[in-house]
Image 1: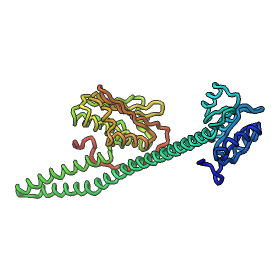
Image 2: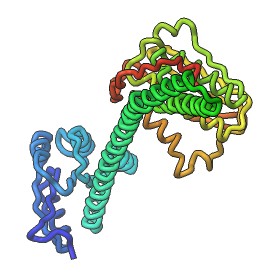
Image 3: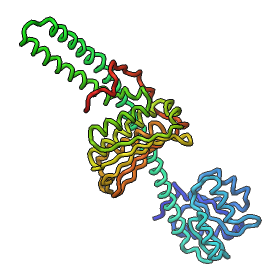
Image 4: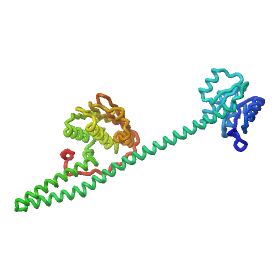
Length: 384
């Protein structure tokens, strides 16, 4: 049973200069039980006017006076239309037919053999519908991916803002209370006469001091105050601290000529670079079994690049394909918040992670909250 009935006829645009051939084409289709609503045109002008209306399929003769089927196909593509196009001719050669198919024709037939015309048209229409459905699916998938990226960026931004808020509360409430308690204990220690009380107070002072240092370390992890001194200073502190804590050699290299520009980076970029280096060093500690780490920070051609490489065992394809490798995925999403990207390469000789951020690109990162000023130099904070 035909898909096209009197209620829903096949809308056919027929590019044909012979009325007899047009009637013959319609007869072949109607013989198969297909209802057809057809329009015959035989000039470029009429063809272009007809394209203003929707058609299920276009059937075109190859040769017309002052016009041709291949030119009509080019005009159809120039209009951005995906209407199935079937070429029919009594003199088309194989080379011409192949060229037409390469240019986007759905099929070609000879006028002296129209027995498969109905089948060819139905197949062309079905293929076009499948293609359009795939394009719609690809478009929807692209929109979905974009929304996921926007959500991930929003989450990254929200996490950083929440970290800053928590760090501020620790500084203002917990830190302030612990400092006041330390002063009170010190006063008690100065005025206590009994040795037992002195011992208890000194022990309490040690506990409070350790709690203050712990709160400072937590604040630093939540919102690194060292970044107020610039990205270079923060990475120097991070490298020294990593080397001191793990015993793994860690060297930071920065071109002297780039230092002035690195002190005036766009908002959000220093924090992204710092978190990227932090995640990379954390992975080195957990997985790399390395003896040397090198951090290269450079600025060239308006692009900030941060490269962290180690000489460890490297990452296997299984490691990179893990469904729960959220650390690496998080780096990609974090980089996108400032218009950048992350490249990761790994082999038996080690792993290299590179963050690239075009500084001219428009970024979507948030404006960082006001800095939390600590009374102590963060380089004197205790170890994690």
